[in-house]
Length: 246
Image 1: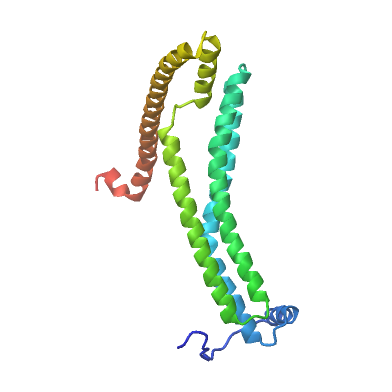
Image 2: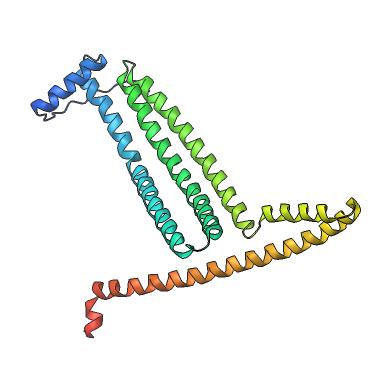
Protein backbone atom coordinates (compact mmCIF):
# COMPACT_ATOMS: atom_id res chain seq x y z
CA UNK A 1 0.00 0.00 0.00
CA UNK A 2 1.49 3.34 -1.03
CA UNK A 3 2.33 5.83 1.67
CA UNK A 4 -0.70 7.99 2.47
CA UNK A 5 -3.14 5.55 0.86
CA UNK A 6 -5.93 4.55 3.22
CA UNK A 7 -7.34 1.06 3.43
CA UNK A 8 -10.90 0.69 4.64
CA UNK A 9 -11.23 -1.85 7.45
CA UNK A 10 -14.72 -2.24 8.81
CA UNK A 11 -15.21 -3.18 12.44
CA UNK A 12 -17.79 -2.68 15.13
CA UNK A 13 -17.03 -0.56 18.16
CA UNK A 14 -19.05 -0.45 21.35
CA UNK A 15 -19.33 3.06 22.78
CA UNK A 16 -21.37 4.37 25.65
CA UNK A 17 -23.48 7.46 25.05
CA UNK A 18 -21.09 9.47 27.19
CA UNK A 19 -18.07 8.29 25.19
CA UNK A 20 -19.77 9.03 21.87
CA UNK A 21 -20.79 12.47 23.10
CA UNK A 22 -17.25 13.19 24.27
CA UNK A 23 -15.84 12.19 20.86
CA UNK A 24 -18.36 14.39 19.05
CA UNK A 25 -17.60 17.34 21.31
CA UNK A 26 -13.86 16.88 20.74
CA UNK A 27 -14.44 16.71 16.97
CA UNK A 28 -16.56 19.85 16.99
CA UNK A 29 -14.11 21.74 19.19
CA UNK A 30 -11.23 21.05 16.81
CA UNK A 31 -13.12 21.29 13.52
CA UNK A 32 -13.46 17.64 12.47
CA UNK A 33 -16.54 16.28 10.72
CA UNK A 34 -15.83 12.56 10.90
CA UNK A 35 -16.02 10.54 14.09
CA UNK A 36 -13.80 7.91 12.42
CA UNK A 37 -11.11 10.54 11.80
CA UNK A 38 -11.26 11.56 15.45
CA UNK A 39 -10.87 7.95 16.58
CA UNK A 40 -7.87 7.46 14.26
CA UNK A 41 -6.15 10.53 15.65
CA UNK A 42 -6.83 9.67 19.26
CA UNK A 43 -5.54 6.14 18.61
CA UNK A 44 -2.28 7.62 17.30
CA UNK A 45 -1.96 9.72 20.45
CA UNK A 46 -2.81 6.79 22.73
CA UNK A 47 -0.23 4.55 21.03
CA UNK A 48 2.48 7.20 21.36
CA UNK A 49 1.62 7.83 25.02
CA UNK A 50 1.71 4.10 25.72
CA UNK A 51 5.07 3.84 23.96
CA UNK A 52 6.63 6.55 26.14
CA UNK A 53 4.77 5.63 29.35
CA UNK A 54 7.42 3.24 30.69
CA UNK A 55 10.22 5.75 30.14
CA UNK A 56 8.19 8.50 31.81
CA UNK A 57 7.33 6.28 34.77
CA UNK A 58 10.97 5.23 35.24
CA UNK A 59 12.23 8.80 35.17
CA UNK A 60 9.51 10.01 37.53
CA UNK A 61 10.36 7.22 39.95
CA UNK A 62 14.08 7.99 39.73
CA UNK A 63 13.52 11.72 40.29
CA UNK A 64 11.34 10.95 43.30
CA UNK A 65 13.94 8.57 44.77
CA UNK A 66 16.76 11.06 44.20
CA UNK A 67 14.79 13.81 45.95
CA UNK A 68 14.13 11.58 48.97
CA UNK A 69 17.75 10.39 49.11
CA UNK A 70 19.02 13.97 48.87
CA UNK A 71 16.74 15.06 51.73
CA UNK A 72 17.92 12.13 53.85
CA UNK A 73 21.60 12.86 53.15
CA UNK A 74 21.11 16.52 54.10
CA UNK A 75 19.36 15.50 57.32
CA UNK A 76 22.14 13.04 58.14
CA UNK A 77 24.86 15.62 57.42
CA UNK A 78 23.20 18.20 59.67
CA UNK A 79 23.18 15.66 62.47
CA UNK A 80 26.77 14.47 61.92
CA UNK A 81 28.37 17.89 61.48
CA UNK A 82 26.22 20.01 63.78
CA UNK A 83 29.34 21.33 65.54
CA UNK A 84 31.29 22.17 62.40
CA UNK A 85 29.59 24.65 60.08
CA UNK A 86 32.47 24.62 57.60
CA UNK A 87 32.43 20.84 57.25
CA UNK A 88 28.63 20.84 57.03
CA UNK A 89 28.76 23.41 54.23
CA UNK A 90 31.31 21.30 52.34
CA UNK A 91 29.20 18.16 52.65
CA UNK A 92 26.02 19.94 51.57
CA UNK A 93 27.84 21.35 48.55
CA UNK A 94 29.06 17.86 47.62
CA UNK A 95 25.54 16.43 47.92
CA UNK A 96 24.05 19.30 45.92
CA UNK A 97 26.53 18.78 43.07
CA UNK A 98 26.10 15.00 43.05
CA UNK A 99 22.31 14.89 43.14
CA UNK A 100 21.69 17.94 40.95
CA UNK A 101 23.57 16.29 38.06
CA UNK A 102 21.47 13.14 38.28
CA UNK A 103 18.24 15.09 38.76
CA UNK A 104 18.90 17.29 35.73
CA UNK A 105 19.70 14.22 33.62
CA UNK A 106 16.43 12.45 34.43
CA UNK A 107 14.34 15.63 34.33
CA UNK A 108 15.80 16.28 30.87
CA UNK A 109 14.80 12.81 29.67
CA UNK A 110 11.35 13.28 31.17
CA UNK A 111 10.96 16.66 29.47
CA UNK A 112 11.82 15.20 26.05
CA UNK A 113 9.22 12.45 26.38
CA UNK A 114 6.53 14.89 27.51
CA UNK A 115 7.48 17.41 24.82
CA UNK A 116 7.05 14.72 22.14
CA UNK A 117 3.60 13.83 23.46
CA UNK A 118 2.53 17.48 23.76
CA UNK A 119 3.77 18.31 20.25
CA UNK A 120 1.91 15.33 18.85
CA UNK A 121 -1.24 16.27 20.74
CA UNK A 122 -1.07 19.77 19.30
CA UNK A 123 -0.59 18.41 15.78
CA UNK A 124 -3.46 15.94 16.02
CA UNK A 125 -5.82 18.68 17.15
CA UNK A 126 -5.20 20.65 13.96
CA UNK A 127 -7.18 20.10 10.80
CA UNK A 128 -4.09 18.90 8.94
CA UNK A 129 -4.18 15.54 7.21
CA UNK A 130 -3.12 12.63 9.36
CA UNK A 131 -0.29 11.94 6.91
CA UNK A 132 1.15 15.40 7.63
CA UNK A 133 0.86 14.85 11.36
CA UNK A 134 2.45 11.39 11.09
CA UNK A 135 5.37 12.79 9.08
CA UNK A 136 5.88 15.52 11.67
CA UNK A 137 5.81 12.88 14.39
CA UNK A 138 8.45 10.87 12.51
CA UNK A 139 10.71 13.91 12.29
CA UNK A 140 10.17 14.69 15.98
CA UNK A 141 11.10 11.11 16.85
CA UNK A 142 14.32 11.39 14.85
CA UNK A 143 15.22 14.65 16.60
CA UNK A 144 14.44 13.06 19.96
CA UNK A 145 16.67 10.08 19.14
CA UNK A 146 19.53 12.33 18.01
CA UNK A 147 19.21 14.49 21.13
CA UNK A 148 19.08 11.44 23.38
CA UNK A 149 22.19 9.93 21.78
CA UNK A 150 24.03 13.25 22.08
CA UNK A 151 23.06 13.65 25.74
CA UNK A 152 24.03 10.05 26.51
CA UNK A 153 27.48 10.57 24.99
CA UNK A 154 27.95 13.86 26.87
CA UNK A 155 26.90 12.29 30.17
CA UNK A 156 29.25 9.35 29.68
CA UNK A 157 32.13 11.73 28.92
CA UNK A 158 31.30 13.79 32.00
CA UNK A 159 31.17 10.69 34.22
CA UNK A 160 34.51 9.43 32.88
CA UNK A 161 36.11 12.82 33.47
CA UNK A 162 34.65 13.04 36.96
CA UNK A 163 35.94 9.55 37.74
CA UNK A 164 39.38 10.41 36.38
CA UNK A 165 39.58 13.61 38.44
CA UNK A 166 38.36 12.16 41.74
CA UNK A 167 40.41 13.57 44.61
CA UNK A 168 41.65 16.51 42.51
CA UNK A 169 41.08 19.89 44.16
CA UNK A 170 41.80 22.68 41.68
CA UNK A 171 40.86 25.36 44.19
CA UNK A 172 43.57 24.08 46.52
CA UNK A 173 46.09 24.20 43.64
CA UNK A 174 45.09 27.77 42.85
CA UNK A 175 45.50 28.81 46.48
CA UNK A 176 48.90 27.12 46.67
CA UNK A 177 50.16 28.86 43.54
CA UNK A 178 48.97 32.22 44.78
CA UNK A 179 50.69 31.63 48.13
CA UNK A 180 53.96 30.58 46.45
CA UNK A 181 54.04 33.58 44.13
CA UNK A 182 53.19 36.06 46.87
CA UNK A 183 55.84 34.68 49.23
CA UNK A 184 58.65 34.48 46.61
CA UNK A 185 61.15 37.33 46.23
CA UNK A 186 61.14 37.14 42.42
CA UNK A 187 59.45 35.20 39.62
CA UNK A 188 62.41 32.88 39.02
CA UNK A 189 62.26 31.67 42.61
CA UNK A 190 58.48 31.52 42.34
CA UNK A 191 58.75 29.29 39.27
CA UNK A 192 61.03 26.82 41.03
CA UNK A 193 58.86 26.80 44.15
CA UNK A 194 55.73 26.41 42.03
CA UNK A 195 57.13 23.28 40.34
CA UNK A 196 57.84 21.74 43.73
CA UNK A 197 54.40 22.71 45.03
CA UNK A 198 52.69 21.21 41.98
CA UNK A 199 54.55 17.93 42.53
CA UNK A 200 53.40 17.87 46.16
CA UNK A 201 49.86 18.72 45.09
CA UNK A 202 49.80 15.92 42.51
CA UNK A 203 51.06 13.41 45.07
CA UNK A 204 48.30 14.53 47.42
CA UNK A 205 45.71 14.19 44.64
CA UNK A 206 46.92 10.64 43.93
CA UNK A 207 46.64 9.77 47.62
CA UNK A 208 43.13 11.23 47.78
CA UNK A 209 42.08 9.28 44.70
CA UNK A 210 43.49 6.05 46.15
CA UNK A 211 41.55 6.64 49.37
CA UNK A 212 38.34 7.28 47.43
CA UNK A 213 38.80 4.11 45.38
CA UNK A 214 39.48 2.14 48.57
CA UNK A 215 36.27 3.44 50.17
CA UNK A 216 34.33 2.60 47.01
CA UNK A 217 35.66 -0.97 47.03
CA UNK A 218 34.77 -1.35 50.70
CA UNK A 219 31.31 0.05 50.02
CA UNK A 220 30.79 -2.36 47.12
CA UNK A 221 31.74 -5.29 49.36
CA UNK A 222 29.29 -4.16 52.06
CA UNK A 223 26.49 -3.67 49.52
CA UNK A 224 27.17 -7.09 47.99
CA UNK A 225 26.98 -8.70 51.43
CA UNK A 226 23.72 -6.90 52.15
CA UNK A 227 22.21 -8.07 48.87
CA UNK A 228 23.33 -11.61 49.64
CA UNK A 229 21.68 -11.50 53.07
CA UNK A 230 18.48 -10.09 51.58
CA UNK A 231 18.36 -12.82 48.92
CA UNK A 232 18.70 -15.70 51.41
CA UNK A 233 15.19 -15.41 52.99
CA UNK A 234 13.69 -15.00 49.51
CA UNK A 235 15.34 -18.20 48.28
CA UNK A 236 14.12 -20.04 51.37
CA UNK A 237 10.54 -18.94 50.64
CA UNK A 238 10.80 -19.95 46.98
CA UNK A 239 12.12 -23.46 47.77
CA UNK A 240 10.75 -24.57 51.19
CA UNK A 241 11.48 -28.26 50.42
CA UNK A 242 15.22 -27.60 50.70
CA UNK A 243 14.66 -26.35 54.23
CA UNK A 244 12.79 -29.53 55.29
CA UNK A 245 15.25 -31.91 53.69
CA UNK A 246 12.59 -33.35 51.36
